[in-house]
Image (cartoon, rainbow over all chains, first blue to last red):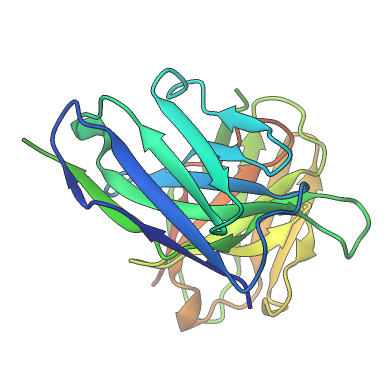
Amino acid sequence: QVQLQESGPGLLKPSQTLSLTCTVTGGSISNDDDFWTWIRQQPGKGLEWVGCVSNSGSKFYNPSLESRVSMSLDTSKNQFSLHLRSVSAADTAVYYCARDTFDTVTAELRRYFDLWGRGTLVTVSS
Amino acid sequence: DTQMTQSPSSLSASLGGRVTIACRASQYIGRDLNWYQQKPGKAPKLLIFGASTSEGGVPSRFSGAGSGTDFTLTITSLQLEDVATYYCQQSYATPRTFGQGTKVELK
């Protein structure tokens, strides 16, 4: 079955760049209909969509982070990545990678996050 | 951005009791509304998509309803394993947005 796994440094200093990779196993990230997504959750808080990237070249970012974020896809490694520049303590969170796909059962083509990684905690501290 | 507002923020119910969580969107989202369950230290798990369609393997006691801007998630007979935080999420537009979560506990 398809699985996602995040990897990257767990501790950063303020102003550094956060770089995370999500490795997808058991399936391909080359489907143009899937959006490979990053979602974060600050300690004790709710879920915040960071953005997504697809094999078709589409990229969408949360406007609140857009000036600092970039995402990319590497189909040769079946991975996608997140880069977040100039981090601060407010970026301390568990970062999840997920797949935004659409339903093929009801034919209504509703989209949802069906697969999630386990999450990785990134702490920003001096 | 479409703001998603859940109510209540937390609730407690008895084993076997009925639980209803409301989710309101700040603008029209059709039926592009999903529900997730998150247990402590775990990733969210998809329960309901398209407002009312259950993901495979989800117990039948979970159901969703609504369209437009107002939605509900109902658990008809609360079980111990249902203690968790529940989030609604709209997939009508980007940025995707989530409700703030509803924590469900046992009374």
